[in-house]
Image 1 (tube, rainbow, N blue to C red):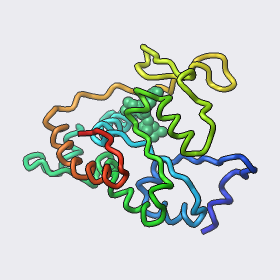
Image 2 (image 1 turned 60 degrees about the vertical axis):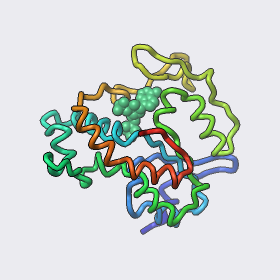
Image 3 (image 1 turned 60 degrees about the horizontal axis):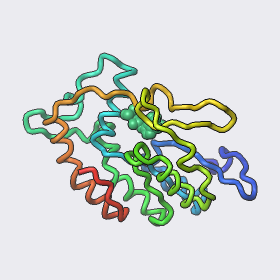
Image 4 (image 1 turned 180 degrees about the horizontal axis):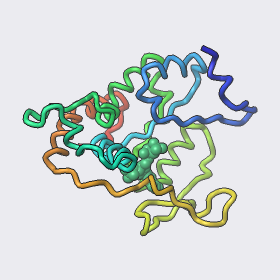
Length: 210
Ligand SMILES: Nc1ncnc2c1ncn2[C@@H]1O[C@H](COP(=O)(O)OS(=O)(=O)O)[C@@H](OP(=O)(O)O)[C@H]1O
């Protein structure tokens, strides 16, 4: 396998090359391959409540395949016992502690920044401040860059670079979620609790999902 360096743009002095592939966090071979490319890589992971994440994931799939079975049909292996189907990717991806374990075999915790998906919505400038500090950058992106768009229901950029008009994220970000029966969500919440606690311990950060 060719070193992945070849696939990256050249980085000049004072520049940072960034690459965003959400699936790397959950891909078994990714830590080894990233490590063999550069052991100095810094890793930024955006995590949100795994229950909401699963519903968001389902909403995304549903938008592409409208005939999809119901959320509960996919989430449970056995609806009577409430056994969760951990082979369903929407469920599996939210077991953050398991995925992080894989990465910690190669990278120390100090190489990671965990961004709270919830805070990214309620305090985007604060989370972006943490990102800039982590990357050793000046805090260029601040409160001044964001405003809350009532129509979108999310923060948007006042003035993106190269444009004089405000910009929100696209239609596929921040879609309304279908209503899932509360007992289904409760079961899922119970399922994730121990994995969430483990994740808080591993990262030293309580994300407040329970
Ligand atoms: N500012 C702003 N505007 C719109 N959406 C926002 C924003 N900040 C965070 N989010 C949340 O980002 C979620 C979509 O991101 P994804 O991680 O699914 O995107 S990606 O496709 O993996 O890149 C998306 O999830 P859903 O609400 O389920 O659509 C949003 O909740």
